[in-house]
Image (cartoon, rainbow, N blue to C red):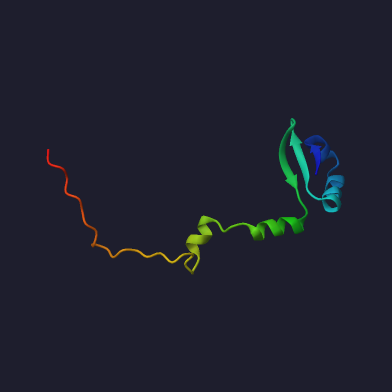
Length: 84
């Protein structure tokens, strides 16, 4: 994986893009710290498809993700508060 300072990435974006397609992911740094990664679209799609669904997607899905056994309501025994 090659590393590109942000100034070089901006000035030579076409070269950065070509390197990404031919060599794989390219790291962009800002002030020496890794800031971003440019990845080929096939790799991005693979990563996106392999990602777990978000909480929002899970809550909005039509099917249940687990078989939970919930106790009937009103059947719980309540503790009596300690006498003072």
